[in-house]
Image (cartoon, rainbow, N blue to C red):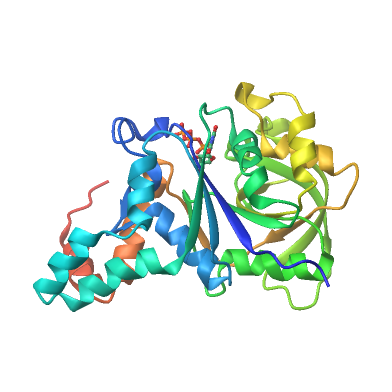
Length: 296
Ligand code: UTP
């Protein structure tokens, strides 16, 4: 039996430059989709996948994320006195739901570097990584789909999705062959190679790595072995490529819809679709959208 995955690392120390000026003083992970910060969607996905231990790698705006998952005595007291039971349950639920630890990445030296910062807190056991700005709507939580594959192969698993040839150079791309696997929700591949942000003409496939990973602790040695890559940053994809020399790595084309909420258009799409799905808002919002005169 593979060791159980008990911890999820949330790298949240990026600069969020695509969302300036909103991210000048607060982290993009705290931008709300409807009324919930982006990072809370990821944390709820971890919980629904059976993991409560959360490690958040923070940079600037650390206090906003910490405060969000902390107990807010004044707010709870005020809601209690005013008899706002529903809101009190929502606010309490956030601090009750997880066991969270924080580690600082002082400089944004790349996603790989952020993951490496979590080494001590993770220890010598498998762990997951969730990039909160990839918000994923799925019947079976995306992370759960990856954990099922990990439990079968006892090896690292990355979430991938098909993108158009024009889009692939914004992602890490994989060269891979499909493998059979009983019980997987999505299609599973064994990876032969990975390339971070390839030119469209050099991409090995249209399968792009997105922000969900199940990793084993050897990744930390790979992260310390590699040199800065694309954008001068320590890239997680480069460390995975290094690790591929010594052990198999799998990819899971998950079932569900992923929104790139770290990008303005992706964020808008997520906002509209999550609002439409809401019981309390969906009806009137749909009526409002229908009334918009959307000329060419
Ligand atoms: P992005 O590639 O989205 O970069 O990072 P970014 O800096 O957050 O945003 P832009 O591109 O400037 O708008 C992917 C994930 O990796 C984390 C980010 O917080 C995000 O969750 N990250 C990235 C770090 O934690 N540290 C880094 O040094 C880089």
